[in-house]
Image 1 (cartoon, rainbow, N blue to C red):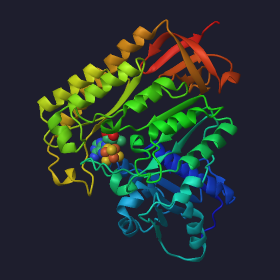
Image 2: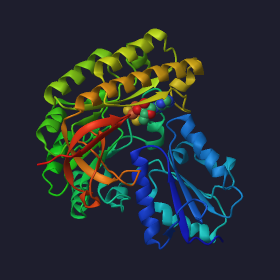
Image 3: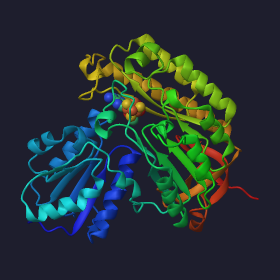
Image 4: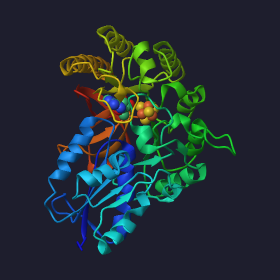
Length: 436
Ligand code: 5AD
Ligand code: SF4
């Protein structure tokens, strides 16, 4: 029997995983376990994993192997547990348990079992346990918190493993969301991010009442205390005019939409099963900008998808140039097991993928520099989050999600401040407190 007094959770991947780790941490904390400073100092290590790209999985497997000879309890949570299940336990005998995204509340049960039985434990049920929605986790930050409003995904983009790891869409009840939102407001939180693989699907599975994502925003905006509401991710096929109006009308809802195009080529979009065209996407972007003129738009892009020709890539490049994204995550395609695209040949050579990636990144960089240059002299409202890494300046974000650093006293952390933009450095705006 291994004695467990301390634990460490290493989180990979998206914000939903960060939130799931907070749910795990809260339960371990109430069990009386102490959070260790690093994996090395912990009796129990949980790796909360991501399967979205091959590299993410390789990183985890490399990391866990560092502990194979240590007398520690090793658990794998998250998407790798869901998509590899027993194979993980068979291939890595030193893993003590796997814990899926639907079983987050079973961590203490697993630890109890490990105390009495010398076996590997697999808790990876396929059905979502809605009591997770009523478990309010302690958050890592005292200012900003995420809450999940819809889990799973029904879209089956041909490259994506998420529908296989996180199951079908299930919206959280309005009452449970409002309750947690108020709970966080009472604790002094200032910013809440509403999470879902596709927040625009929120409420479409309710049979008893019509209550969609925009309706939720109108309700949450009424709650005192929270200054800012963010949300992600929005599938372009589902963004509605009602949502655009909500962003415009509601003072707490941030003017930032993560709106992933994935590719600018209609041929590739069709193969990706994205269910929109370049033209219909651009129409929505234009409409969004008409309704919310100062909106910032973010994207994800996959380059090197099977059969992506130079011409297809140019379509993506030109679309990027036209939209002038404010944030972009650009990935090289990697085949994922179980997906439709994994049956097709991953034929774009690595060096071409790299070249396309670099071209888009430098375009992104150019666009940002041009934008940031035009911001110099502007005054922006910043939510002050913490000390910057240099431990001297303060760091915060605008409603449009731009990172701003400026000089000021630490007691400004947690407040909204007007900052005059004076210069910039890569993706950081540098300013000073604006005089009233
Ligand atoms: N290869 C590369 N990138 C991927 N993504 C999802 N699946 C893959 C894959 N197989 C990217 C998409 C998605 C983001 C979260 O990860 O761009 O929006
Ligand atoms: Fe994956 Fe597509 Fe669902 Fe996003 S919408 S999680 S890319 S299947």
